[in-house]
View 1 (cartoon, helix red, strand yellow):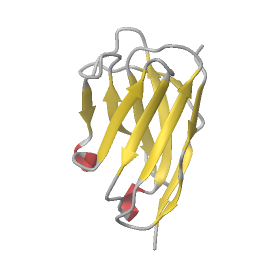
View 2: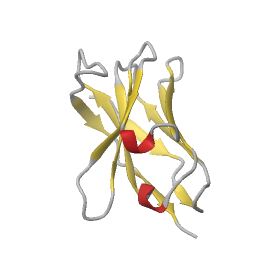
View 3: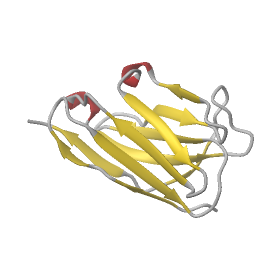
Length: 119
């Protein structure tokens, strides 16, 4: 089972930026970022395949960018123009085999990193 460790969360003012990282213990295919705000269900933020194809939730399009460095087995999430409603715990996920951006099945989870957007 793959191990995933997120980092890069913190407190940022509205309009600010953060870059999240997720280090994986081995090479993985499709990967994704999810988030969970207090009292809400976990929701998908973005997916990226090993070839670099991406898809985003509507609420982050144009503000967030998912990327990966396959040589380092690391996933990233660049978050710009942050809003208070982006406050959540952000989780890295390794997709199960054959996952694509059109048919993604969540696999292993990281422990999450807290992002708080507040003035």
